[in-house]
Length: 212
Ligand SMILES: [Zn+2]
Image: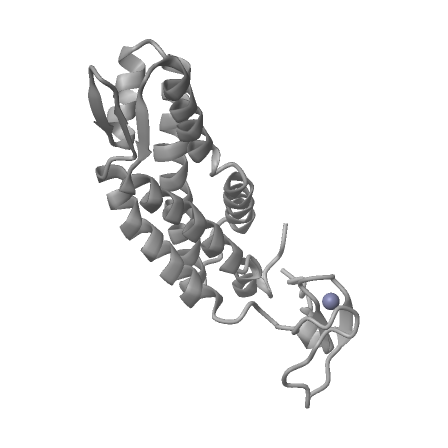
């Protein structure tokens, strides 16, 4: 069977700008080549993509532990005092009948961050092993991780909303716990990790394969 060969830009002596998308001609002598249109530095692949993506993903995974174990919110009034971790907050919401909010908090603060971190780890392992396994599905997974990144702060909004609600409804005080700081760090580190990942690495081992 004849294999279709897809030449890559650098095989054609071209480089594409990852900021403005302009394709420019690359010369052998060019080391720190800049895009002639927007003056961004041109790279064949994002530099240190795998290394920095791993570092950020591992840092986020480590911080995921205090994010879940430390209190995310402390609420106190004359009659009661509560310290909630993410999970105890969800259980409390569930028991008070706020099932909808409990479900949103559970998905936004437990399911989504863990899904993103596991997806990034899977992408990194597959790219490091030069895997040719399901490239299209891995590409879709990467797009999903990027898309979800925009909604990751949802959980912080929920905490803020709850804090506002408590403050209006009673003579209560609300304090954001250290867990929330760790959680915010998880969200931000995961977003940076997804930005550092170069999806073109998925396709590199498939250069000489029949592409879909
Ligand atoms: Zn450019």
